[in-house]
Length: 312
Image 1: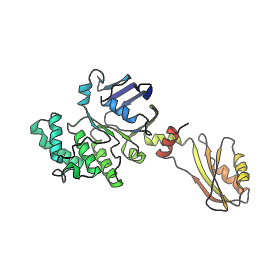
Image 2: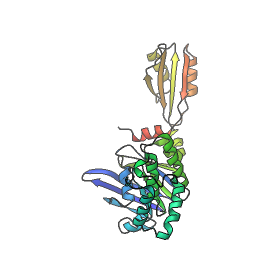
Image 3: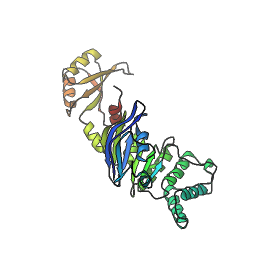
Image 4: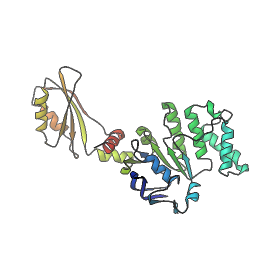
């Protein structure tokens, strides 16, 4: 449905987006992740036609962003990080104003408002001034704005930014319901939200795509390296370090400070798909050391994100 090919954006000499390419299928909920300044918002603004690419192309349903920008915009609902609301208007009046601007026919507005009110949970606040609403409710109004014309594609830039945990869950549930009918692209910093909501994740760093897969597949690939936290009683740290190093020279063994006086601690990283827990246990069994902690850390999206976006 959406094809992005060698897309780049320069601001003078600064490259914000660097030759990214991706295909997005109809019905996907795609999470666009990355640290601040990675190029997420710039990418979304090019997808919506708000910014013109420096090079490359975007095709949506065989329409080019260069030649068919207006037709593409009619296919897209866009919610920027700060919802563009008029705070002195009532919710109903604001939605009616949006409907007029977007060309929704008068005879169809009531049914559309009814549908959006139910979907976005606005039934009890239609008579209120937007200024009276919490940030979570304002985001719901912004979401209704983005969906006014029932677009095929919904692009949401940090839709839960600044919301409390309950509001995040509410917005996430709304997005999940909408995702049954539409193609959705979400930019977010909240990795647990992306994992819970999106069926595909793209991680971008310094304007380049560094990962593109489902969260489950990303975790499976990351299992090729493992991290073990080991704490020991009755051991000297330098001697224990040398003994552990004898197991395999490729191990990365990091000495850690322990809060308890009689305990020493290590973080042990092994490359490849080698499981070294048995070797570590047998080596320690030859000594008089006592294991206080021996934990293999599970791979999480947060750890994968950190590894892929870590500054060199």
